[in-house]
Length: 524
Ligand code: KIV
Ligand code: ZN
Image (cartoon, rainbow, N blue to C red; front, top):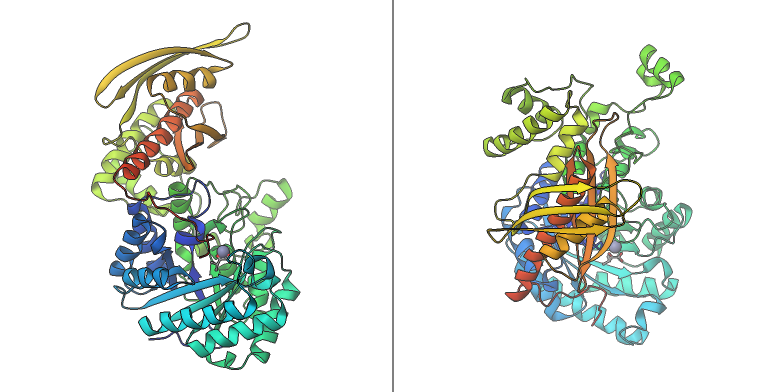
């Protein structure tokens, strides 16, 4: 069952759960991966790259389960150029009605040097491994990693070998985000014209965003003949990330006059999935991010507002509703009931079950007691950070902080750790420093603080602060988040949230799960 190459249809291949999740600190839990995969499937993504099955037990289980649950999308797993990787990948994706093995090897001179293979040796390896994959699965994607820096003749040669060995999709990765749009279009066009058999396969484009050109490069590749774009929600990915799904999809929709190709994506679901990916990955969306940023449809300046009131098209090239944004709506307050809260959350793109609504309602009431008006952004923050989990090993019970000019800050923190209440007092350079030190006294750990970020959710003195804290311990990187009207309380909760995630990861390592995590770049 292969994808048909319709000339006016561009397949969307989402790799949020593989290339996106690989980004340091963006690790998602098993349930979060399943949830995101379900959303991608529902919104019309053609192919979901669900993970890298040999990397860890966790990845294998996630890809297998996503494959079992898939309704419409083709489920793909990544495998390096060896039989063990490919077999493991097949074991995971075989459960899906539509599946794919994606195997790759770095073909540029720099990448060939890592496994120390000559050009001929690598060519043989490509033939063997793609043939092996094709014997297992009728839908095989092959990628020459770092294709855009691979010698032209060699690139043509290895693509021809992969096609002859049975690859059905040839993906051309711009692994380091080096290419410019004219080159991207030209490369795909020339490959299709030159490589024997190219007209029998689909060409894909996979662009990284190191120079901020990933979206432009992907669209240019389509111009050159590619009919599959590889991308991630919010452009999540290593370094500067991957092509953002929402950007290419909306560009093809809004500028269909000059780019006459369409995708199967229900664009009204973009906002909702963007928010969910931001939450579970711990990577907030920048305010001015195209399509899904908080300010993407906000008009502040007087001239813009005046123009918008007279005719929306003066400053808006797409309707907010087309990406799943509701129009402005009235804020909620402490007298608002459950039905109003549910209605508002649905408007914002969150579908909440009865149990979740119960939990959110309690937190909403708590917030409404402290804040006169609960605005849309407050509710989004409430949904993004989630509440306390009763299974958490570490819980904040209370805290008191004294700080000011002339002298050190003092924080007394009381926590429930493994069911026992304990407290500690610590001093620091400021209230956050003192609080984190007290928490560390209560739960000694070696975790190094990599990132501490505070955002005001709305304007005003009573605004909530969302805090993100990223910590690293023995190579494990986790992110914790929280929102509160008190910045120091929010910081403490975010730090504890990150430490809870570390506790879970450490426990899994103890069970042997994920203990043999390997990077897909360790090419064997
Ligand atoms: O960027 C890259 O080259 C990749 C490959 C594994 C396709 O992600
Ligand atoms: Zn990549």
